[in-house]
Length: 114
Length: 110
View 1 (cartoon, each protein chain N blue to C red):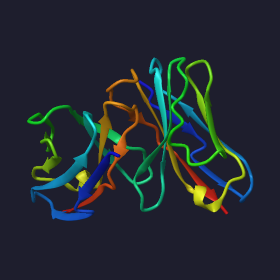
View 2 (cartoon, rainbow over the protein chains, first blue to last red):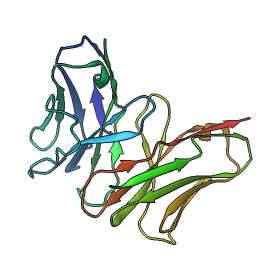
View 3 (cartoon, helix red, strand yellow):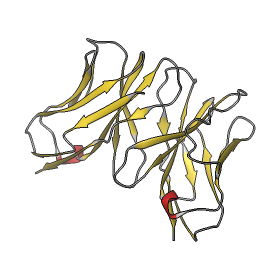
View 4 (cartoon, one colour):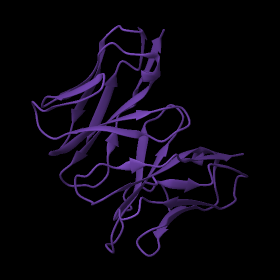
């Protein structure tokens, strides 16, 4: 079946502009996660959605970052007033349930802030 | 705070030369240790989940084991197509996210 999909695959933007990154999880998966992978660093948790519960935003690095999930499916990660340090690969993952289940990752969006 | 350390950072092997990758962790209540494979330009691909010390799982040339402090990913007679970065991650009993190690970049030469 179809895996997690993300768009765009690459995004180049200028410092100070806003960007939106999209994630389509695997159908039927109730949990959705966003991670960031910077050059030379490991994956860093950003935010977690589970069903209709309030999202876990504990990993968001600043208030310039926000995310929403509409209808329990598609999610959008928004970065406002982008900075050069925001350059990274943004990965989305989904899992069948929120507790203890394997997370399946999409291919990521490579964001470059000039 | 959960911590995951992987070693070595990079490993070069000849085809057929077996070896092991290490993942040391500290976590407040382990609720799963995960191994992923990541190829360049792609997202991590799920390999294994281990839940308790003594547990082992195998898939083709890969075998993952778990103790209370570390996990090993054993690679038996590797092939060039096993070349990738292998990531280890833990999940604790309080949160929903994974804490990842820095990964081991494996290169298998023919």
